[in-house]
Amino acid sequence: MQRRDFIKGVGAGSLAVGALSGGMRSAHAKAEYSWKMVTTWPKNFPGLGTGANNLAALIGEMSGGRIEVKVFGAGELVPAFEIFDAVSRGTAEMGHGSAYYWKGKSEAAQFFSTVPFGLTAQEMNGWIYHGGGMELWTELYAQFGLVPAPAGNTGVQMGGWFNKEINSVEDLKGLKMRIPGLGGEVLARAGGTPVNLPGGELFTALQNGTIDATEWVGPYNDLAFGLYKAAKYYYYPGWHEPGTILEAMINKKVYDGLPADLQSIVMNACKVVNQDMLAEYTARNPVALQTLITKHNVDLRRFPNDVILKLRALSDEVVAEIAQKDEFSSKVYSSYKKFLSQSKEWSGIGELTYLQARDQA
Image (cartoon, rainbow, N blue to C red):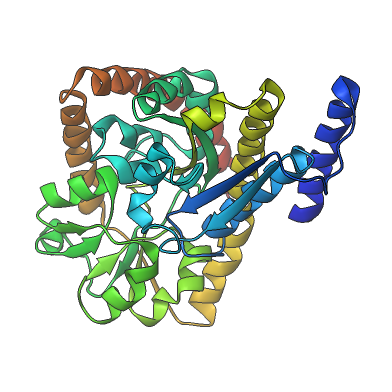
């Protein structure tokens, strides 16, 4: 089923429920609420930008046209890294980004995006929806006048594009790399220099030597950005982002002013898009990776074991220190750590052993 048909199907189902509870509204009826959605992504960028577009369309269709959402890419209304403040103060009603960009607002925000060597996409959904994560996230964002929701996931990412080989831990020292969030803190601890750049600036920065390396997402997005033209080596695994949540944030006053049915529609639209984006990356990444290797002769490499082990040790230090910075970060860390411990045991018995068995000759 194509995404558009899928979205229409969900919208039709929602409208049918609406008919039972008070009458069908025309999908072309004049909007009762006109929203602006600002994003951290380039306009219409595959996966991330189109995920924001799909969310806006789905909210419109599920609401029968009662909510109309216009999407603005990074820099169109506000710069990429200013969307949190823009939605908080009401310049826009809604935003689409990822919570690790807002560590300057709260260190705890990063747990609701991704943690190095932490939860996978499936495990993140488990923690958020059924493990207490959503309650903590809601409590945190309420302090800034926002309501959060998962609205996409990239799955495990790639380690990044490098203009020099990484053969040992020593090669990380002095490395200027675009890498946000906790991953950036880990790189700094290893002697590198993390740089936080929006996606639209990565290619030029890598090509002209402003940075030595960059991570972005994975093959699907990296191919679209043409990063293979700016760097020679493509490393894996994506230790820093094992299952990155993309978020929707809604101005709390605007959300609280919606009737209950529209609040439900907005939140359930986010759930649909959250699942759909992960499915898209699962389908697109393998094809894009083969294109990068066979058509563009990309040099695909695995990080050496000693590098992975060092990064893992430093990650444990960084994450534990974040938990000690304030009471709320400690509370979030405790919840996350407990869920990770439980999930690792089951994932090792279930997912890991199955994959090993499937791949046995």
